[in-house]
Image 1 (cartoon, rainbow over the protein chains, first blue to last red):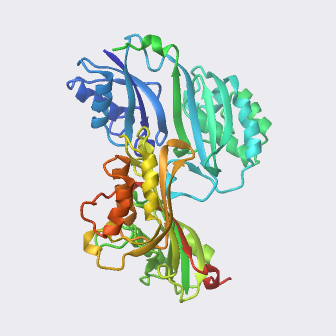
Image 2 (cartoon, rainbow over the protein chains, first blue to last red):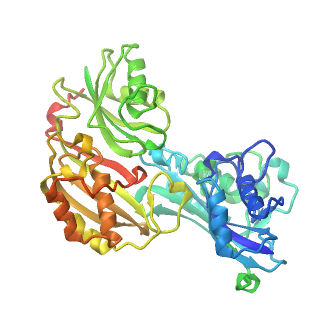
Image 3 (cartoon, each protein chain N blue to C red):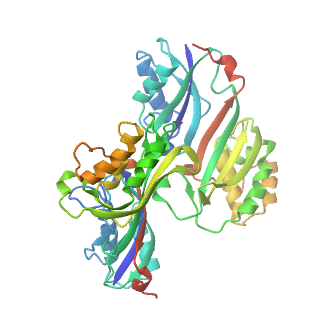
Length: 256
Length: 256
């Protein structure tokens, strides 16, 4: 039987989402828990996509196939009791076998958190700390160039720039944190994001904020489809996957 | 020369503030950094008071005597470059030799953070997670009994109840977190707090919220001056020292 799980994690202590031999990853921990529940039958956990080392998720999804009879509620409970306290299953559903956690995604939202105020040790793994001058207005102007359907080849790492890099960003904007006016959240909503794309977009926005380049240069770099002279990747600790939307999810969910 | 430092820390990885042989503490790290700056002369760091294992501080103060000539700004910088990233010096001042970080305090503020919403792995060390029914209105009614000058003997651990336990709480109330309506912050402002006092007061408020006792029972327990039948201590991860106020601090600060 196929299940869909919604989960969150603190990426600080992991080498990213995807299984890598000899390293601790989110997927490894999820699969260990699922395998245990599935009577020790090796169980794959297929997520919406990977996140990199140090990146967090407030709302990530994955599907998995379990042979034992278990209600979604009990699966959630059993997963959580077998997971470390920095990974948490929020919800679980029975889904049709043709549901796929990666292929059925229609929308994802990423946030990038920037702290320009005093360094806070409690948030050292949860925000990018930057205490130099930044022109946020210009960054807000520049971020708009990312909105729309574009070939984002200029924002992927070079060894991966052969695949299809066309993605649509529905909205992108910078908001002040409601509880801390010295914190800013960069929000990106789109149909999908390439590896490092968000951190590379944010990295370029920093160049704009530092007034090293004009906002319009972002448009030029985007249209150049080349990563050359554009190699700024914002640190991972500020990045969060905050939402994933599926097409017609209700049609795939099997009610008990 | 005497200096005053203002600092913050994430208490998660420490056995409290105060030096304990063989254990990692905040004071140990501060004194190691100060001693290094002070040409390896063993340097004591005298704080406003200790915090316990797992308790955080957003604004804590301490004084220390340094023999080498150093500006407050350079002391701050040197401390931070010698401290781990979960302890941070926010500011430093030169002060008169008769200033004392503990004795000159007139006011302290503690917050206790409660999350009644979905467990968030990112906040696992920074809020107390509670997902059962709580009557917040009754807790808000009960917390008012702590306001005023009282003998708080009923809220200290038994082996310490011989000292003077009279303290004045200027204000105490519960607020909803501005950015998350399922999070509550219990705020306590007073002239001083006994060891475990805040966590023991919050622990009793939980009994009220669970409707095991009436709000008025808090008054009775306070007046009983006895810890018997009252032994609930709220977990440390929700507790923060957020502010310390000194009397006439400006008179003690030596301007450069």
